[in-house]
Image (cartoon, rainbow, N blue to C red; front, side):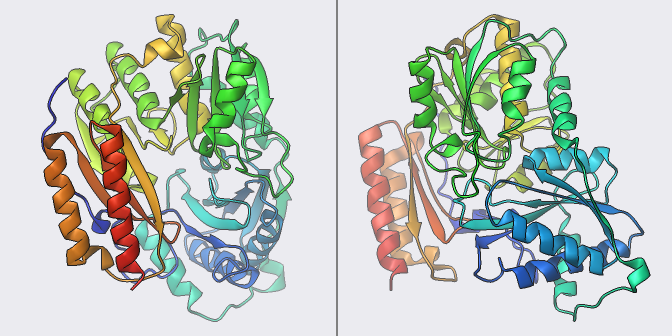
Length: 465
């Protein structure tokens, strides 16, 4: 095995780039507990109005609104529509749709912006609002700042004759299904494959099974009965053991698990082995590199496995790490004009075919590679040796730069010294939850676990003071 270059510990400053003056927007829109400010009807009403006023300055147009399946989506859809109408903006309502589908439809329907009501992989009692530009990408920082400035102003209503209208787009799922199928070659036929698909009772419940079925696979579907409260509940990409069991029970060739808004995916081979985002990204990168279809290298994050980095080096592919968050991945890909990037969570961007992370399209890229090389999913991951990595979540409510505390930093240095050149340490604040992620990576699973627990205990003790 190659010996990796030393990697320095990364602390909370790597979590996201600071946005001057921003009060509401995090790394992925605005997210939190329903009923607790700012995830309240009053705030979201004004948020709809604020983005409407900002867009109205750019000319007339329409905004798409889509959502996942959590119960609060009905409430927030209504108030967003009202706020936009008060600002004089028309809305097109998509209903439950995956986040990447809303990005795609924003482009193809020539909307000014797309709004997603979702808290992604979080439980039903959370929700959030995120935005896409007319190009299907995340809003630029200056747009977010302009929206925040509007939020500080009194809400007004345009003249009745200028109020925005709302219509429902009834064929949105069909449009997106056809798009997903179009991103792979017409020669990709999935006949003979038995696939278990777990939709996490989320936004892809009425889309993902149809995509794989229409390409010829035998599909056994789970997580397709959303009731507003069961999104991500013990299923989907966050709980892949559920998928593992059903792949084994049905003696399927593989399994695909999405998260609540359909932008993440993990896969399971016929033996019940879980492939995370690093492994799926490796399969896609290696296949495209073989066919000379990969432009540039691959973008990962500070959480990407050391084994992934080494596997790409063996393919002579350049690898760049950025802070966690799809915004950083897309920005880096755009800057370098590269095609592929992603996170171990299964949030993968195939920029040559779409503008944002897309669980269905990622799975299709893997399936296309399998079919082309006539190999099983298990065989496709050969060449990737994953390093043991432990990630622990420490709940914190303290603000400020507490991760710079001398005692915490000393423990980080001690662990780095013990791991030497074959390990990494990372401390990072979550961009969406009141958590600190404690990650330790190295060659020995048991020792890595012990070191991670030791560091987590120190963080917990210091942040409790």
